[in-house]
Image (cartoon, rainbow, N blue to C red; front, side):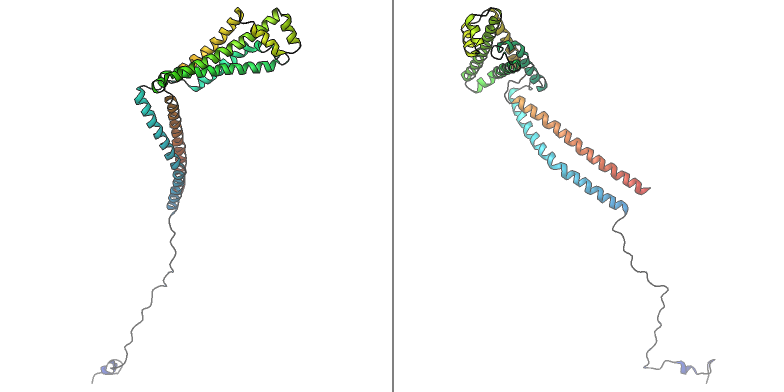
Length: 296
């Protein structure tokens, strides 16, 4: 019977039936490393999200205002188109920066013309006489503005309304202008007559401070040559105001207003677009600088 090198027979090394076999346990090469949490994003991703939020804030701030302005401008453009199609022309009017200062200058020009008319009542208060003169001049210029506007739009209103209503307005305004100019002229004539050749009754009324009686005496005398010349000067100033009102406004009562509104809204829309573009440009430059610094 053969034996191995250990002196035991081969049968002695066999596995006995019914006994569990031994399984070798593998030895790991190294301990597993714990899971390290991965950051939600890199620095570039964070900067991009911040940039997106800032751009959304700009859009939220400006978009509703731009949409509202765009709706107003669209409505105004539709009205402008309707009037332009009806009139078949462009609007014609002057700038308000010319017209209103010009009318104020006319009112101021009336002050030295009418000042002596009120020296009769305000001899002790020249400043009050100047103020009243300016008020009278302003009233004359206002009436001139009104008359010029009625005459400018007389044809349009006469076609769409009763022409006699417009004619009555013209007559009333002209009557008011003539009456006011006549009254101022006769007061000035009475005061100058008292200065040059004072009458006894008129002088006594002034000395006793009965200015109402003095005014009645002056009014009874009627206009002489000097008074008529003075009245024509006043009416000439009023005529200049009427001409300015006539030629500086559009004949259609709404065309000028709509065109001014249209230009105003267009300027506001352009300014709003520029401001939004500036804010967006600032955010883009900031993002570009941050990304460049991150890359460095």
